[in-house]
Structure formats: C-alpha cells, structure tokens
Length: 148
Ligand SMILES: [Zn+2]
Image (tube, rainbow, N blue to C red; front, side, top):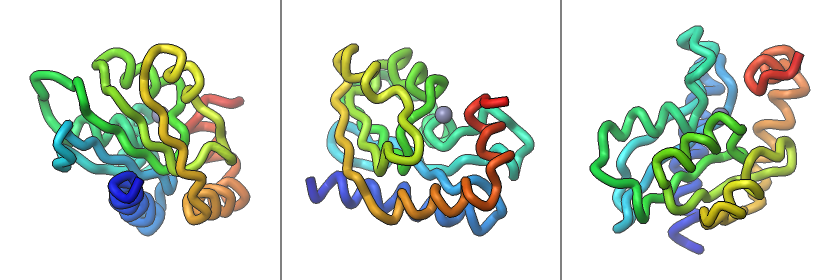
C-alpha cells in the first residue's frame, strides 16, 4: 500500500502541475512490473487544445513503446473515463491505482470485471482538487468527459 501511495504522489504532482498551467488537475503515471516509472503526465486538453490528451493517455504516451504491459500499473488521481479505461483494456495494463472515484465514477467496475486489479485509495487531496476545479469550471470539465 505504501508503494501505491508513493505512485499516487507522482500522479498528484502531475495534477498540480496541470492546474498551475491552467489545465484540468488530473495526473497519471505508468509503472513497470518492478515499480520503475515508465512515464508520467497530466491532462493536457486545455494546454494542447487536444481533447484526447487525458492524463492516463498522456502518461501512456510518455512511456513510449513497451513490449508488453503485463504487470504494469497505471496510477491516476481520478477514476479513469471510458476512453482511458478502454486503453487499459486494449493494452493489457494489469492494475489501476485510483486516487478517488467520488467526484467522478469512471470505468473501474468494468475494468475489475475484466480482470484488472483496482486499488482505490480514497485520497482527500485528489477529491479536493477535482471538487474545486469542477465548481469553478463546470463547462471545461463537462467538455472533458463528453457531457453536453
Ligand atoms: Zn480519460
């Protein structure tokens, strides 16, 4: 569990960096089977004008090509949306560590049903980051998750 908390700290640092850039405060990182960091990033939709640059996807891209994703862990500050949950399934990422699923419940149950190990940390700082952001910028958030 300590390792998961340390991984979440990396994702949280990314989320804070995204917020400081004027973006949506969601961070993520991909770790290898032996706990080595493969890639880290944050939601870049606002910064890049790219709707596909969700945190998990950005971290996945930052990791570059990997021969296999077996045994890898994706850590994210927020429950992964359908799009990023699809990425986890597509490439066979073994585990998803989630900071919180309180402000947004993504695909974690669906992932669990398909054999992905889900670790939900219920982290208060992750909740506060998203709650404040959604309150201040509901339009930007709804655009991110495809809600009209
Ligand atoms: Zn996503």
